[in-house]
Image (cartoon, rainbow, N blue to C red; front, side, top):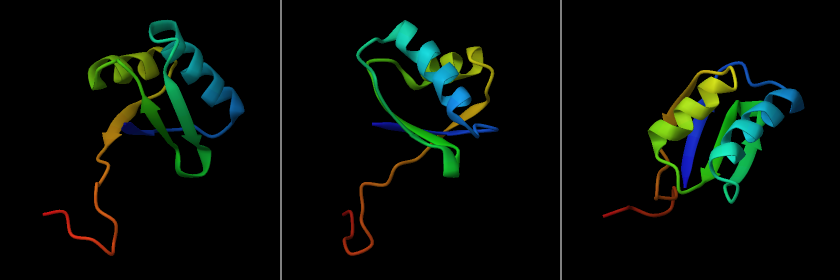
Length: 77
C-alpha cells in the first residue's frame, strides 16, 4: 500500500478528480481518502511515480508519505 499527502485536497470534488485520474490508469485500484488530513492511501499496480503523475494530472501536488510497519506497541526489528 502506498500513501500520499495531497496539497489542497479539501472536498469530494478533489477526491473525485484524483480518483478519475487514477482509475484511468488502473481501474482496479483501491483508494481510501482522508480529506481531514489531505491524504490518500492506494493499493495499485502503478508505481509511485505513476501515481504522483496521475495526481498531478488531476491538478494536485502529492508526495509519498512513508507508511510504518510498526505499531507503537511493537518494534520492527
